[in-house]
Image (tube, rainbow, N blue to C red; front, top):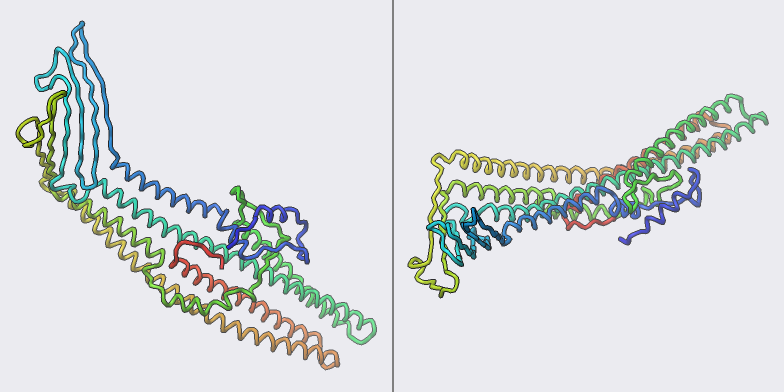
Length: 474
């Protein structure tokens, strides 16, 4: 959808005076409103920042595989005696499969060196290899896997939350439209009854009507004026609630002026034409592709990674270390490995009871089972919601058709009653009664249209969660 120049929109709104709705009233369309929410609402920014944080967590986890350089230089002298002077440079390279490579250059001279110290320059190249624990999986690999799964989990969560924000915005917008239409309906009804009161007063002056008829007309007018005031109050409240979703590109809240009116109406809402195709599309969607379910799928992968890591703690820690040495300015002699200029070590650690390791592993398994239960519940919840909203959309559509026919009949009855009143065969009481029924039916129809649109939007944004996280202000 084309981006709108919301800054110009807000400047125009600020310049509008009063709270009347005339031909020059500024209109806010449904698509423009959704564009403002999508581009400027602080929650939309927040969800985008959360995704950025998740991406940075991957970079942070990769840092565990970064080569590490160490260097030191030191000397010791007491009473003019040079104990030692040492320079050491070391490079450590962790690898994916738990193997660590290292290289070292050490130069030391002095008059008080340990017997095990090699004087002069010494190069050392070594490898540390886990033979049991941490060979197939270790903490470095687990953190990187979990960060990658976490990014996909965050993307799924962001899609659900962003679409929920758009759904909330649509619900607020169409409620605002509904309150505006009710207000307009009440205003037209008040105008008709004011004209009727004036006509009744004129006929009273001519002696054609009784004085009680003016009381009847006035009572009806005052009743509708009360309803008009109530409708205006609800419209003001709906406008204020709509303002909660109105933000500028500078991330500042904006209070919507009461002079702004909706550019869309409930009767021409696109849902009336599109609901059949939407119902058909939802019938083909596998629930495991919904973003809410994908969230639990990625969470399960994180928990499975944690289980694999805890499983390593059940194994003995057996590490083999080998270092090759070569003195400075000496010819290197690499082979055979265990004949000359080498150092090796074999380190074994075995917890005798493994209480912590066994407990951690069982906890990890239990968390996976909990997540599976959450996944099953979420799928059933989605199935129930989709079924319920499908039924609502179909039922409300049928009710709208009935309500429209009902209004036609009420209007015919009112017109017939007015004709009889003109012929002296009826009374204002009967006209008022017919008019009240017609007004109730028209208000009911507006309410039904809002319910239909809201149920349709629930299905629409549920359907959006099956797609890639791209918002569409349809």
